[in-house]
Image 1 (tube, rainbow, N blue to C red):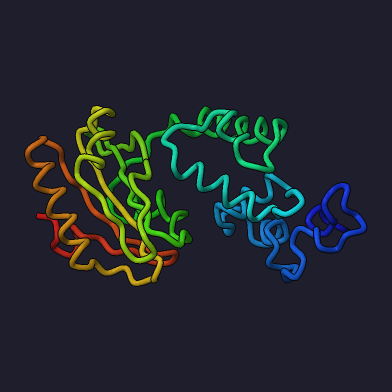
Image 2 (image 1 turned 60 degrees about the horizontal axis):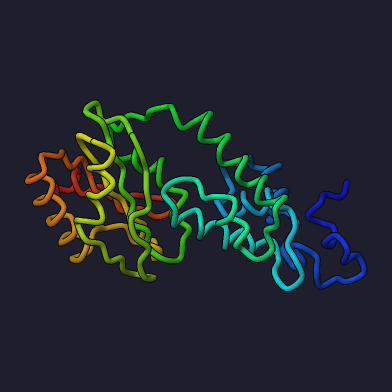
Length: 237
């Protein structure tokens, strides 16, 4: 049985250069991985590649998926149709499909509040950011029962460093009328223990939270397979 990912791009049937995953082992292609291991085994980029299905001449589906993911990471709310169409290779039809998928997800799952009881609860909400090659600093707004109101990427940093200011972190948390919050960021290196810069950020956020009357629940540093809790390791008292 031949899957769509084994076929060349539409209109390019005689050009082998336009095979979507040419050179990628069959069992590592997104659709085959999904069939064999389930959707939870795929990265965000791979899930988007399956949704988009094909690329365009000069830009394969992986590149399109990466550009779409960059747009989604950089927006708090679902992007507009116009913002999606601005990505070269995403025409009106695909942009509508992406917008419909995002809105359906918001309607079906956006209303369910997840309660943060321990660091692993934070890890489960942010771990899909772990495969990014740059650090993402993420805030989680919580109500008084520590139920999640919103999860946002605050800043995108360098390969091994993220630069964040308390005002950027607290702007949306205050807007959400949150009573508490968590923060998290990925370490692309895979080393999750807190660095001196991480400790400094934690201290500054804690000082600001005390002034604002917000409960700082935890700062979690994570990779694809593990996480490190500032509170569990004595960095938040």
